[in-house]
Length: 211
Picture (spheres, rainbow, N blue to C red):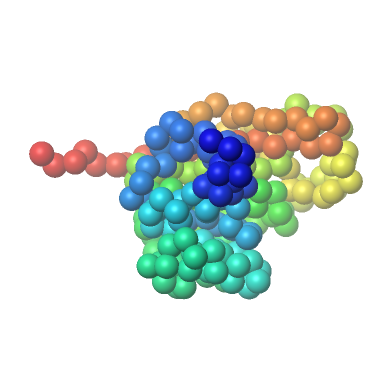
């Protein structure tokens, strides 16, 4: 398949989210929400393949871009699936989704309380047995290169300021949620610039299907 055809089918999907698709953890027919969706870089394939896609972002222009994308690729989906709202204040119902995606969003938390509020709200949306996928900036592997600014935020070597997690923070949050790690933490270190960690959990409590 040519690069043009690959782009047409998958868009700019995050490679680690693509890995979850390859392993069958995000399967056709699932109800998926992208929290902090931006312009919908991770939604092209899902919309094309008939997933029940929802998304939120604080930026009205971003949400309108995703609505336009959905009208093109999945015109059966109503505009109400794509909402202008903060991650920590979702209007979607509890246990509504099979998959919750948080890609490059959580590191914009203002402080520990804001980070915890965003994670708690996304966890509320996830059904028992559902998949939580997050990719976020961390200090893992480059802690000595980060300049703490207070309230969990740091300046990274590339000059940007982010809320940064480390392994103890993610493990403590996993334990507090009662989540089960589906993958070990995986961190990509971009040479002397930043670190990005992938955090993948399953929400416990799924009931076995009736026979």
